[in-house]
Image (cartoon, rainbow, N blue to C red):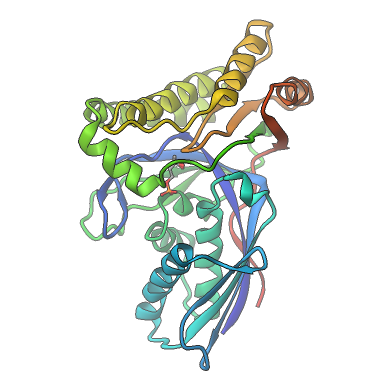
Length: 326
Ligand code: PMV
């Protein structure tokens, strides 16, 4: 009834944005990401007869009501599948700075899915684990796998074909990924509410759906060709398209701050100097950059000089979610 798992967070190169079913958390578009080696969540779960409710500890402190509720809701799915009727104690730790606002739902819910299934003696294969993790967070479905990963949009009503699949493993292409953390306030709206808002109020949402297949096909091909220029070009285009949705919703959502813009400008300047480096930004103000291992130290140095950057991490493609002990 107890298990510990690790799952790594991921960077979406072609982004998931929009839901076709909110209850089952089914995506409106597919997505492609790279799992990140050095940013992970370790989660221990223990089902205990004496507990009167689920309890979540995040980085050593009891969590707020909202994450508690999300975790409990997810554990209800596991309980329904297994017939377990005990509540659980969940202890989750991120090895990356959580207060910075870096997304932790991908690694958090992937680790929870893997640990909860082991503790509940529910033997699921990675595809089934991905379907399960998706119900808590769309990006968590991708963190079940390592390397480059594609989330299938699926078309079944029950969501059984809306899961991630591996594109290549983490050894296929030793790229470097930089994470430039900007100081400043937390993001203004969580992804679920923001997706709903943009879907009904941005005039560009329909185009976003229409162009998603092409971005996915081009990205898949570029990854398999190890073509950094192409991967970077598609990633930046897709990132701007997603942010254009949030900026053109009513009311408008702006996830960037001044530092975000200055980092993008610095990256474009580096590119003009002949250094192959490309950026992507999720629903927040931090900037991720992809580049060759040879160029990463120089790029880190440049990004550290940008006013408002509090820290720059360097990582590379990382492994699948896994059990560490039980
Ligand atoms: O998995 P969620 O519900 O936190 O949504 C993730 C949304 C983005 O991070 C902006 C894009 C993505 O594909 O990860």
